[in-house]
Amino acid sequence: MLIFNKIYKVLRFIPPLLLGMLFISFLTSCSDTKEITSQSKPMLHTFVEIKVCGNSAEKVINEAFIEMERVNLLLNNYDRESEISKINKFSGEKAVAISPVTMDALQRAVMFADMSKGAFDFTIGPLLKLWGFSKEKAGLDSDNPTPEKINMVKELVDYRALKLAVLKNGNKTIRAAMLLKKGMYIDVGAFSKGYVADRAMEIIKNNGIKDALVSAGGTIVACGKKPDNSLWKIGIRHPRKEGSFLSFVELNDCSVSTSGDYERYFKKKNKRFTHIIDPRTGKPVNRHQSVTVIAKTGIESDALSTALFVMGTKDGIALVNSLPGVDALIINHAGKVFMSKEWPQKIVIY
Ligand code: ADP
Ligand code: MG
Image (cartoon, rainbow, N blue to C red; front, top):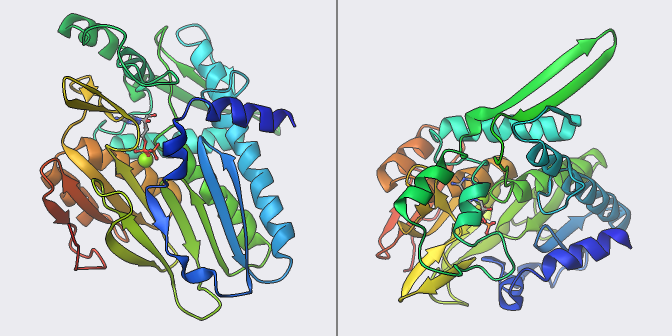
């Protein structure tokens, strides 16, 4: 009950319309097959849906949801009791003990921050606050922050100032994390859905299930096939035409994530301020309308879709082309379409 209260508390912070529009939408092709068992729940500031084909599907789905809730309670920076919140609370003061799960998630996040040369930076929290994205209704109470203020807050954003340590004491292992400067703040928004979806899929596979799909907001992780032996297929939302699709993608044991400027934003003097911030300029990014990434795991597609949203088109596509099993579809601010070398569906309607 406590968990549900918490989830609903968080959900109050999201405009109801947003809740209804997962920016990657399912095609309804599964609904005519009896063997798919499906359940959805509000979680991770969105709706999470799990579809499983096989025996004991209900039990497996429940186990997967329990794991997702467990991991979310460790990572959610909006939950004061989470381990991430403890790291944030004691920034610049002391190291805090963390679980293997939090350590694993943070180590992976650091990898993507390195890979994107800091375009993806999970210590973006203070800049999100500065631009009015850490409250219920995103928006600025007064004028845009001054360049001086932006520069001051930017000093608090640097993932390299997160120190992680694993210490062995006899047969005991201690894991600890510390943010070096007071006021630093980790925000897991760009990778936690992917990470948690991966954990759910792990539970599902450990139960011997071969065909399943986990959808957590903008991230979908799929394995195996539907009962009619076709691959799971999803439509990628058009960033400007609600209800229309840009492209359809078949998921072959992989994950897909979309980051969009329509997801959480406010408008001021007809200018759109979106929830993804460039750590280098300290300002909301207005480079792209949407970025979709296909990768092997949820955390990879989730983190990289945010990273590419911040990076220039050329650098972003080059990064993806250098990574095996990773592909991207970018719609820039002007509606121009860019695809990586092996983007599976060459026909994209914009
Ligand atoms: P969504 O949360 O809609 O699925 P994303 O995965 O792209 O979309 O994540 C956007 C979220 O990531 C923002 O709401 C914020 O919490 C966080 N964020 C914003 N800018 C950055 C950044 N440069 N690096 C890492 N995280 C960011
Ligand atoms: Mg992301």
